[in-house]
Length: 204
Image (tube, rainbow, N blue to C red):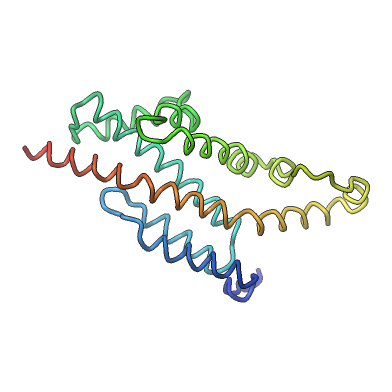
């Protein structure tokens, strides 16, 4: 295995600036009652070493956990009058509901938590990034509206596939991680207010 180099040695100056900003932003994610710092530290480590694909995969796991946490807080607020003692029960019920995937969670949170525009962006991110990478659909992940030189791709299939995947990761990974950070930081205050509120309700 090759020794990893710092991202500052691997990427263009404008990309280095964006990655540096992401690493800084991840320091500002609240960890109280969430445990998100584990994910943030992993993402920071990936970014610092230029492991962009790894940073996207960890970011997706974090985003899915975050969306589920939002739904847990919403259901506790709506169905249990903010009783924090049922948090584990609600989390377990969501985890065992095999029909409640990411899209359905986002749909339930739309308007009550997510704005319609943010919900659309989340679903677009799911289709464009999560599904292709999770299921190895490389062509879907690397495709664009611009027609490719098919004969060249077929002539140098392995090289073209690797080059296209590497180019796509480099061009899209930073924005994908930035999207996850943006959504999480935008809606985490909503989540923390509910978690703190249910905590106060329990003490009363």
